Length: 299
Length: 295
Image 1 (cartoon, chains in turn blue, orange):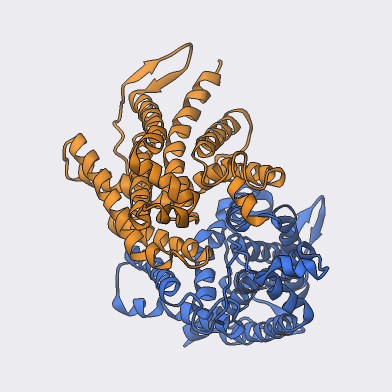
Image 2 (tube, each protein chain N blue to C red):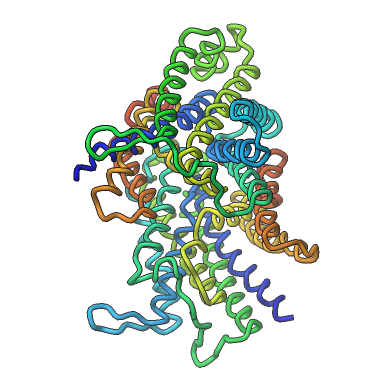
């Protein structure tokens, strides 16, 4: 019974992550292969701040709510850091540079032992206590992640239907046309990166709190593929699609548990399933289950 | 102790492998116009197939070698026909994402068969040549460098001299004009894919003579090769070879002369890449075609 709430919490968290990835990949039309780095940064920031850290003699420890927020801010800052040098690059150069960013951050997680404990990872990340309410049990944690999901979903939905959101989609459709209307497109693209990485950071913080233990390999290319599969299955540039995608991709490997396969097979088989899903959707339904019939990624 | 020659030898070995794999990747990019994420994993699959035949079934060296190259070339053609052909005319990121899917399937399949750990078919005590002072080079390393030089030179000649090579260059220049001139575009793309898979398999087998094998090596190789071809300018064969040189030498010199940890060298490679793209957004030697298109 407990396990069901674990799955439900994962669904909420990954819905947040898929939505913020879709913001860049689907709505803005930039294939950001560095996305897993942002929720990695969020997760690490949260874990470090909640457990407390000594910086030059001062012991710094933040409350849970402040840590969640800081996780988003730090992640957004790195979003800005990635966007500044790369945002003008064209399509595949951008994809490879963002993948490179993931490698750089992954390298930092491993090689900053004072901050991240390196390859050992950070254990004992507590479940939050907010305004006197504790979220120790999985049931209550599900409630918390559902509230976060509703908030993030609402804010992103408002952003996407604001003039800014419409502009982002217009840039995807025809950047030159938007420029001709006197809009500084690079500026808006950087803003979109900041928004996406902020919510990715919050999602990562929730994930760290749910799992209780994180290491650098939680945030590498494999993780990226999971989120990418969610966005693709749900549909590029589809708000509800990302939520459906997150639910389906989290549920997808669960039946494998019933087959009682050896653990050495189950892990790779799960990733093979993600791969197969990605291939089939790209060939037969590149717009996903709920995607719009527009030409995302036309240039 | 002067280690500079030793570091140069290591760099040359790395460069040889990267150049082979990068050449194949940049060729497929030229004709299909997307970055094939599964390319490094083709090399990895080749290395494991060779391992299975040579170390597992104890088949003769040259038979295993030939069968592996043949098998991976065939696998490349199969993958192109079943997955990339249906999406060829779709927007450019669709084949890229699809190739990520192919890459996951290759890695998972190899992991399911061989397990996630590393394997090796390196001889315990390979023949060693002593060069000047303290530098040594093993026989496999010599063979890697020689094979790579011959194959890359052959590839340049192949693209210039033969009919298929010219067709490949024509198709990468402009598909429509090529088809008007009577070049079978489908067949040419299939040939490019076969050639690229062949080069990847060769690179994979060679790298495994020098290092341990693991299902993860495909991704590590892909990442360095992406950086190499992006540095040189995607679609440009000469640029890919130069990019391979830059990557091969940078990572080995970094590890030898600075305190940068080994697990951080990929990150450094990408810092250089992003820095270069800041000033030359289409890579060092690339981009005439793309600059024209974006105008």
